[in-house]
Length: 255
Image (cartoon, rainbow, N blue to C red; front, side):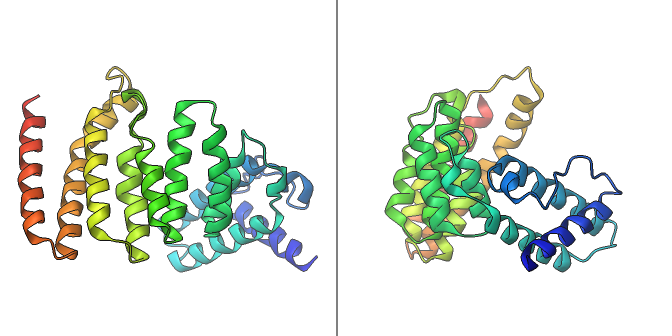
């Protein structure tokens, strides 16, 4: 029971950090409940992270201590998780838990199940991108690229997650594993096109936020494409990519 005692201590500290806002936390001793409710575990992790982030901002906790405590809490949750209890509806949540623990093989299996049984296009796209990230972290480049490109046929209303996932999560993971920068430059350029095809409801706050952020993401993505091609020693292709970026951005600004 040593591990469970440690988990209880972590929860106790989380309660202190929250200013005694403990009403939202389930009993940390109830292993069966937590192990079969990944939504509760993920919510608790998010809550704990938010509390610790506030403490870091207030300079009453160091970033290093926050990161250690979050890593420890995530590891303890993974020990409690019962992935065999996963359903088609929550397999992606179990995947997120193992992703946060950087147990990529298990996360890959769960995301693979989730994307294959997704009942909505939103879930299929997001779970396919999660699968691609896990595959990239495992150095499985072909599978990662195939998963990314499988999202390109989604309707314009569902394309929003593609570029941010590729730019900020999947490409960095692939690079860390030494994957071909030239191949990922091509994937990233396609993801830029997907981003520009995205349709949002401009009358809503999320839609307005998306449109405001779009030029920033596109500019950063083009910069990454050029950097990847340069890293691959493809300087001529990098110059051509710069020209395409300029043309695209001029065309976009004229719309």
